[in-house]
Length: 220
Image (tube, rainbow, N blue to C red; front, side, top):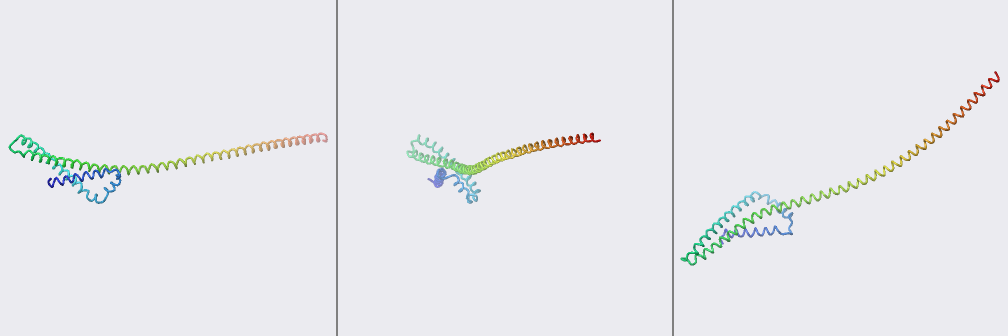
């Protein structure tokens, strides 16, 4: 295996290891988000984007070269298989065809896993943000429910106070009405006494006037 394909194969193994690491269930997305939030990633963000595109272009070139080699040695293998002039040529061509196919798979899967790795990082970040937002919303809902419970308790207390206040007002009104009735009865009694007194005075006045008139008539 040449140096370039050794590097591509090592890159493929590293991609597989990272994907398996990202898929471990006991590492939560929030921890990955903390790792992705390090200052070093912000400093190399521009370089990282350029490197990502450069690696894609390089893998595409290697993949196309592997496709060309596979097609080349496939057609050569058919020709040399029909030829009997070179006995060991067919085996040599088959070996090159095998290497070309191996390089094709290495470059193809490296390109595929590179795109998958980028997408996996984005999804993990989005999932961590959603979980954080969910936690914030949960706290807001709990605080809102607690406020609602407090308001309901205060409302019940106000209702009880209003009921007790209404009862007290009813007692006060009943006492005032009772007092008014008693005052009315007293006024009626006093009015009756006054009327009786006036009637007695009138009777006495009339008796005095009659007595005075009789006296004048008898003693002119």
